[in-house]
Length: 196
Image (cartoon, rainbow, N blue to C red; front, top):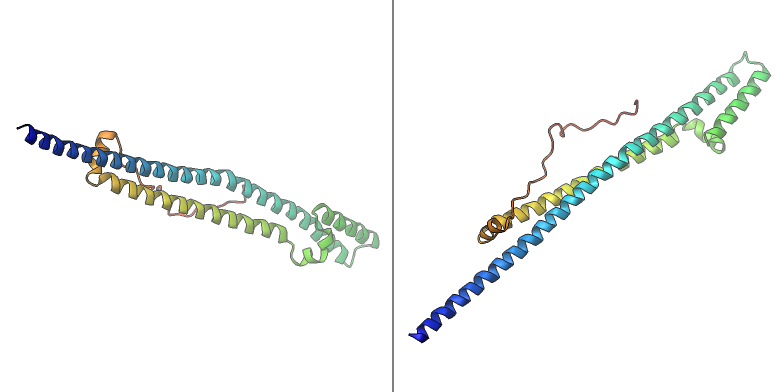
């Protein structure tokens, strides 16, 4: 009976080793996938913070350029009106010309006077284009980070809920991770308001 007991003990030992190796493998796999989900979520948060930091600053820069150019262009237009006015005296025209030159210098547009008159909003248009590009780029990076997070979450949740991992997951505290879901009202595009 000693030989049969050793065979049974050997079979049980092999079975326990197989179970232990399976459990360790499942635990390590779930830990790796959970860490990946957490890293992907950190990227989503990173992009959300980037958007929160960047967009208001860019909007203020664009507002600043637009306001500066509006003042410069108003002075230029007024000076031009005086210069072109048939009733203006030569002194008024000279004074208006000097005001226009000063406005162009103040706005950094003096070297480009002719070009600036043809395309008066060139600088602010470039800033608006930059803002648009930055908004688009930030939203694209955020969309990619959300997609990566959801894919990683799906992989983790699927692995966690498959047999035999579901047995290990319950005992070791591995919980399902939530998918990123859009908030209420997010189907409506946000409005960037330059009037404030």
